[in-house]
Structures are given as structure tokens and as C-alpha cells.
Image 1 (cartoon, rainbow, N blue to C red):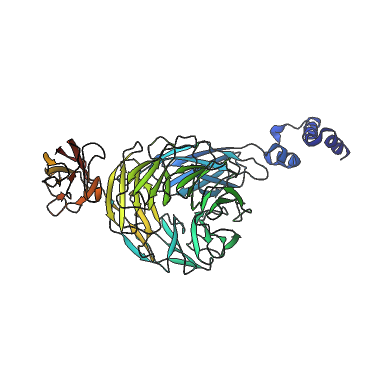
Image 2: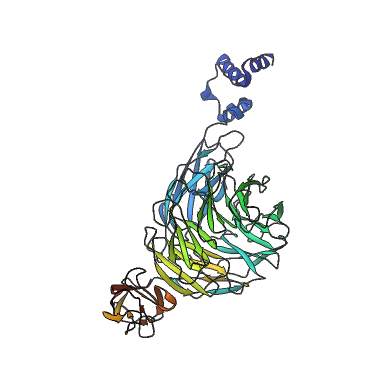
Length: 594
């Protein structure tokens, strides 16, 4: 003991380690004969200084490389040495997928919730009192959707009150996607358990979660393998943590103070410790609050960061490719991008002027970098910001939303492997813009099934197609719009209106007409067709001055465009007709006379 004290005083914090090595030499005990546990026990005072015994983590997936959207993917993490204990956190980019406990160096997590596209999966061993944390290399997994041709009319499920926020997750562990909602008036959370065929059971209700519950986000906050919820409360100004029981029910809420209405909430690992954290926007204080998770279902006090003017929505992602979770905040007339430092803190926000109705994040041009799309109700368009991969974005490009959509989401809605945009409004209309794979998009196609405040993409039928979930137009229901299975290829031909000429400032004399048939000549009725004229030069406009118009094929397969009015610039131009249901398009050659 005297020698120990002397060495410690003489060498400072290095004294314990030097003394231990001298004892090893004195007793001539080979390190090969010491187990990792015995070494750790003897050198316990030294471990905090060394950061623990080094470990390594590897990740494999099954099925490897490619999986169908909505199907299960098993992630297997191996931690060496196998005597390491504790938990492993699994990630999809900056998103936390879930947590699993180690058993003899192995941890397994299964998910059906991977979004469409190329995913970058990792596993992080969070360490214990003896062993140091370690992070696996990224493993790529391509999530493919199957061909589909639009959406079926929505199926409606009754609610207790007015749903405010919705989330998708497997809350009962049966491998099927469920839908959870917060109900403002009933002060409850409802979970609609998915059957796996596109239908849902009657909701399981958890009450007493707070006065006027608002935004909801899901994650495994205590590492037990079950999904938990975080819910904001508008009246009490609290954030409630509801730990899941694994059967669709939840334990009583544990409330944390907030000082704003917190209209949104997001879950991510902001400090890289393998534990789920929370971030909420403070709309009336122009800030956001970050609550770091302790991994046991509790959270540290909130720390605030500037977030722009009136933030109302947050989405996490790695926008600059450094492996740390960043945030995009929907603010008044802009999107603010806050780059994370990887320790739970954030840099000052950088704002991009865009619409402020809703926002979605995804890889829109297939370059492996995250892009942003926002809905702009007033300008009737979706604004696309292509990411440069360094945390900055290009100037927004506006695409016609066709129906003044104020909700937006990203998915692959025709099975071609390219990101598409879907939007919704309160007029019972869904808008679909098919992507070209380069960050540009085609004209809008319209479907019945609009939602009021939520628009989520999932695979509820376990069939590889992209389905939609939202709330009813009256604000008192959950609606589900299932993807229509892909059909045999159809073709479209122009049957009237080409070529033709018209006088400047008047309607062209012959309406534009197409017909859709299959390979055997059978006609296809009830399919939307979009007619699109150029926006510049010699051109024409459809009613209300629009450059595009949608018509639906009748029982004989014909679709007739509304009247097309020639502008005052003489010359020739081409109008195209497209449909997401056909492999071909039709064109019309038109000329304007003075």
C-alpha cells in the first residue's frame, strides 16, 4: 500500500498502470495466462483513464444486399472479445432502428421498417464498465418496392377524437406495421395493430398521457427491445415518455418540462453514445431543445439551440456525411439546417427560403446524399433542394403539385427504384409526382384520398408496395390508401387533336384526346392522364391559366383534355400526355397562327 501510494504520487495518474506492470514483471505472470476479466479487475482504477478494453464490432444482414420493402431484415452484430456485455444499437444512417442485448458476443435485431432506397446500416456497441465502445463499418442494403399503379380509395378507421400526430412502428412485436395516433380531445394514444394484409384491428387505447397531446415520435428509450413513445402536451407544456409493454400498450407517462407548445418531435442519437435522444422545436422561442437519453428510459435536462424563425417540424439526417446526426427544421418561409457536432450540440442554423407547410427528407437523385422537399400551398408546388453532401443545398426548384398540397412525403410509388413525391390536401386529393432519378420530377397525377395533417409511407400489406396512412378529412379518422398492384403494360396513343393549328388568343378547334389499351387491344377506363404544355415560348394554357390538366379515361379508354387556349406567340409546340399506368406517352403537334 505504501508503494502504491508512492507510485501514484510520484507518477500522478499513470502510477497505477506503472505499478501494475511492475507487479506483473515481478511475479513473472504472463499476460497470456490472465483472462480479460482478471486483467480488468486488477487494473480497474486504470480503466477510466484508458477508456476500457478495446473492442471491435462487425455487422451482417439477412437477406444481404437487397430486400423487398416492408419485408423483415435481420441485423446481426458480433462484438469481440465475446466476453463483452451490454447493448448494441443499430442505425440506418442517422436514424436509430433499435437496441439489442449482447449474448456471448452476439446481438440480433429484426426490422420491417427500412424505407425504400439504398440504406447505410451500422451497429454500435455502447460499451460497459470494462469494455470500450466500438462502431461497425457501414453495410449497404437496397430496399426495393414492387411495381404498383397508384392507390386504392382510402379505408377509414374511426378514432376517439381528433388525431393530431401519427407514427408507424411495430408496437406489439408481430412483424407487421402498426399506426399510432395522439388524440387531442381524449387525451390518449391509440395504436392500430396491423394484420399484415393492409387492414388494422380496433385501436388499443392508452389514456392519461397529458392534456391535449400533440406530436409523437417512437424509439426504444430503455433498451428492452420494445418501442416506446415520446409525446408533447400543448396545455401542460410537457414531454411525456411512455415506455412500451410490447403488446401495443404503454406504461404511465413520465413527464419532462417544456416551455413551448412543441408542435413536433424527433428521435435520433445526437451524441453518438448509442442511446436514443430527443429534439423538439420551440415555435415561439425560435429555438429547439435537445434532451440526451440515459438509455434507461430517462432523459437529461433540455439544452436549447437557435433554430430559425418559428420552427415547427424537425427531421434528423446526416446531411454532410460525417456520421453525426444533423437536423432540418421547418421554419417560417424557410428550412433551417443545423449540422450536428456529434456530441449533442449543433452549429448555427443555415436557412433556405422555401415553403413552410411540410417537409420530407430523402435521396431524390440517387447520389447517396440527402435532399429536402417542402410543400408550398400558396405557390401550388413542391420545392426540391438537392443536397451537395457537405451540409449545404442547391437553390430550390419548384414542381407543380397539381392540387395545392400542403403535406409531402417521399417513396417509390411505381417500383422503378427512383424516388417519387406524394402530396395531399384537405380536398380529398392525393398528388403523385414520379421521379426521373436525377432529382427532377414529372407532372402531377391526382388520386382520391387526401388527408388533413399527416401523410406517412409504409407497407401495410407486406406485399412490397408503398401504402399511405393519414388522418381523415373531418379530422376524426385514420385513413389508409393501399398501393395498387402493378398491371400488365398499357400503351397510350393520341387519337384526336394532332396535328392542328389555332389562332392566337383562341381555343384550339379540336380537343386533345388519347386512348389507353393493353397489348391485346383491351381498353382501360378510369385511369388519370396528364396533358402538359410548355411553360415558355409558343404554347397554350388549360383552364385557370395552367400549363397542365388531368383527365380520366372513360369506359371506352378515351381521355379528353379540357380546352387548350393558344397564347399570342406565333410558332409551333408540342403537348405531351402521360400516365403512370402506361409505358408510353402521346404527343400533339400544335401551331399558333397570328
